[in-house]
Length: 164
Image (cartoon, rainbow, N blue to C red; front, side, top):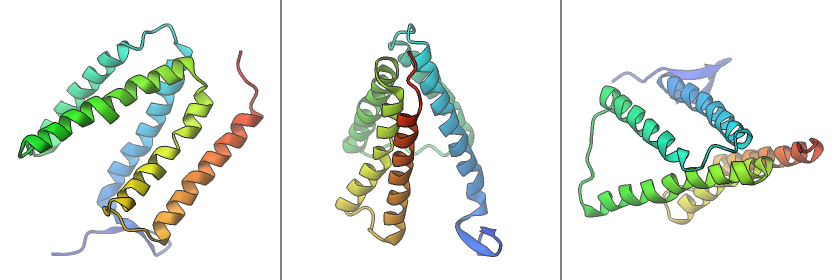
C-alpha cells in the first residue's frame, strides 16, 4: 500500500498526512465559533442558561446527520461501554456546557478563558499517569506552548481595561 501524502513546509515533514488537513481546518474554525459563542453568551446574559439544552439538542441532531452521512455506526459492545457513553453525556460533556454558560454570564470571561488553558494540560497529564500516553520531549514542548499561551492571555487580560 503506498504511503499517504504528508504535509510539508520547505521539504520538512510536518508529521501529519495531507488527508488530515480538513479535520485541522474544521478544528480551527470550531475554535473561533466557540470563542464567538462564549463572548456572545456573556453579552446576552438575559438568555437563560436552560437555553443550553436547546443548543445541545440542535448540535446532537446535526451531529447525527453528519454521522449517518460520513461514518460507520459502531454500537457500544456491553453495559460498561453504554455506561461510559451515558456518563460522558451527563458529566464532562453535558455539565461542561451548563457550567461554561454560567461562567460566561456571571463570571469573568477573561479569567474563564485563561483557566480553560488548563484542560488540555490536565487531560494530557491524566493520560500519561494512567499509561495511555508516553511522556516525551514533544509532549513537554506542547504543554509549555499551552502554558505560554495562558501566560500571554493573563498579561493581555491585565493590560486590558475592564468593561463596566
